[in-house]
Amino acid sequence: MEKELQNTVQSVHDYWNSHTLGFQYVTDHSIEPGTPEFFAHIRPWMNPYKFPWIMERIDKESKLLKGKHLLEIGCGMGYDSLEFLKRGVRVTATDLTPNAVAMTLRHFEVEGVQAEAVHTANALDLPFEDETFDAVWSNGVLHATGDTERAIQEARRVLKPGGRAIISHFYRKPSWMWLLHRYGRENIEYKEEDPPVNTFYTDAEVLAMFHGYEIVAVEREHHRLLPVRRDGLKAALYKYGLRPVYNLLPEGLAKKYAYKVSVTAVKI
Ligand SMILES: C[S@@+](CC[C@H](N)C(=O)[O-])C[C@H]1O[C@@H](n2cnc3c(N)ncnc32)[C@H](O)[C@@H]1O
Picture (cartoon, rainbow, N blue to C red):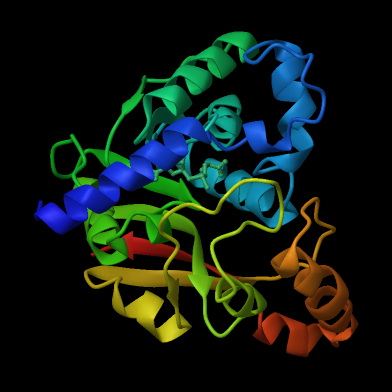
């Protein structure tokens, strides 16, 4: 891997290893991380519970993948993989960062589920043989790696022919989030910086990266803007400008500027 990309991966690693997705949503700091109470406390804020379309996608895909082997790339605290495991899918769960892997292992232990494997792996250089998996699932990860196309093609490499890549989601442009992103890396949802990389693409740019796949579904994901916990200029712009205006837009128009697009594709 070239030096510049290695440096990007290192900064992505350093950010996520100290900001494992989930800790940002803790409001009761007396709860011990890694306990059943901890995972229950943040669950409503986590995928796949926060956005119903993710759970619907897991339900649908699990029916096709029962007894088959799915790789999750960028598992965070393992909530998505957990739901696949509960539905009888064999899962290898991976993340770039050791802290996410440790939380996922603990989470599976607490829930009493058994994965095939849980370990660190880089989406840009997966430690698996060609044609290993029946499916690859990745949620909120590939557009934040520094080389989205390479990640999509690595997923293809480890898929068996006919295997499914279910990628929720890419960041779209033009979209309300893209507009907001231009006001700096300050996150508006919680009081932390944004990750070092979040690349925005047009829908056509996303689809062009799926060469060697047949596209099965392209879903634009839309929700009304949520309240925020931050202060400062960007949060104020969001609270008093963008949110009230966007939330008044008719559904069709609002969806046009949705910030996520998800793709399901089959390896050919
Ligand atoms: C926004 S979080 C999403 C976590 C989880 N998928 C979820 O929905 O809760 C992004 C995750 O991707 C991981 N990640 C970032 N770059 C990665 C890479 N190159 N390879 C594997 N995982 C990566 C991060 O460590 C982090 O856990």
